Amino acid sequence: MPTTLTVRGLVIRETPVHDADKLFDLFTENGILTVQAKSVRKSGSKYGAVTQLFSYGEFCLRESSGRFYLDSAVSLNLFYGIRNDLNALALASYFSELIRKTATDQPQPQLLRLYLLSLHHLSEHDRPLPLVKAVFELRLMTELGLMPNLVCCPVCMTYLPVHPVLRIAEADLVCRDCRSEISELDFDTKQSVLLAARQAVYADYERLFQFKLKGESETQFADYAEKYLLHRLGLSLPTLHFYHELTDPAS
Image (cartoon, rainbow, N blue to C red; front, side, top):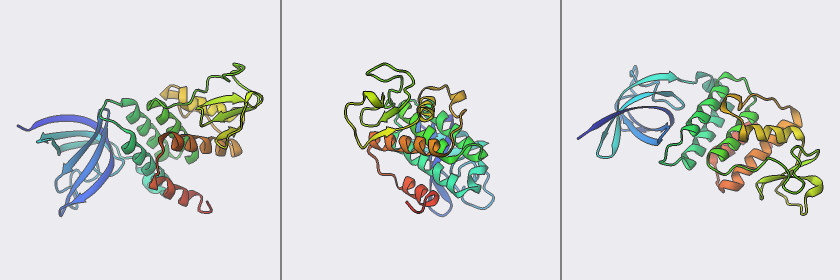
């Protein structure tokens, strides 16, 4: 017998089926649900907007034989600003691919919160894209239990080294003078980059994006976060390659 449930979720992938139907992946606090929506691709469809990519809403679903079907939906945020910027759209797609590859069937409410907060800043264009990307990557690692230990140097216990080295392989930081071996995965960096990484890993969500970096510091922060994530997850992500082709064609 069919059952109904009401959930809040974010559309992270959509696939056209039949003449006017759609399958869409809905990211909720309790995981990802694949939902079929009838006739939503028809012109003037009542639920066309709320079932499009990166739309957040409240969805009334009918479950039958292990499959979910859309009965009704109310839009909560369509993040229109993302659609006006191809680079922001590419970055949001990268976030979506990361979520699809790392989300589990267990409740992960903080992952949804992280994604929604990141989409907010992409839509409002109030933070540089590299900063939003780096914070998302490092906080995702925290929520997955793969965060680096950035509390202090494990050798001399210094909290804020003058010359910090962020070590990807060891998932920690060390003073330059305390480092016994040099690895190609080491980041000799600045105190500002260490403080930014700590903010991304440890801060409350209300303060997660409440900082600024400029120039070389922003570049190093973005480079460290991406390389740390890729090293820990061991993934190849087409959406990441596309984002870099847009933002840094020379690379």
